[in-house]
Length: 138
Image (cartoon, rainbow, N blue to C red; front, side):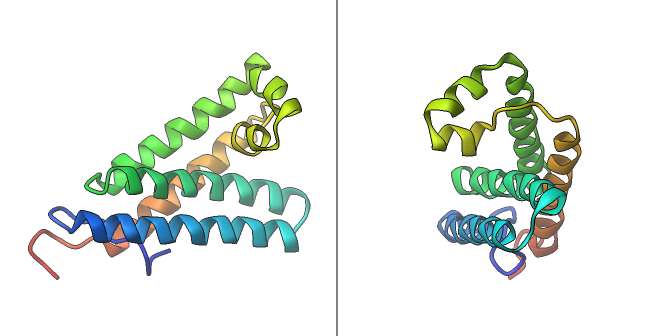
């Protein structure tokens, strides 16, 4: 992902959006690959981290001038919000009728997921921060 995300103040929004779109696709591919080769906790919790990393990339895609810490915070808030929504039973009901809802909303609250979402948000922040350059620098 470090090869793709380039968030920096004053950067070209179109280029940042394109990089974020590629990063999102790479993240989806990583998630599918993880599910293909891993099982159990590795697949589940790795998928949780990748889920938030995908949201991170989508935040940058939607708002290319957002800073890495803010994108990470938004991604984490969305992930946690969806996880806490699972306490209501609404996602479980929607998941019974739609594979897409199951993939996006999940169905059952699991407290350890909250930790792994934070790992994904932190990874996004670190990866984007590693690529960020001060304004005016190439």
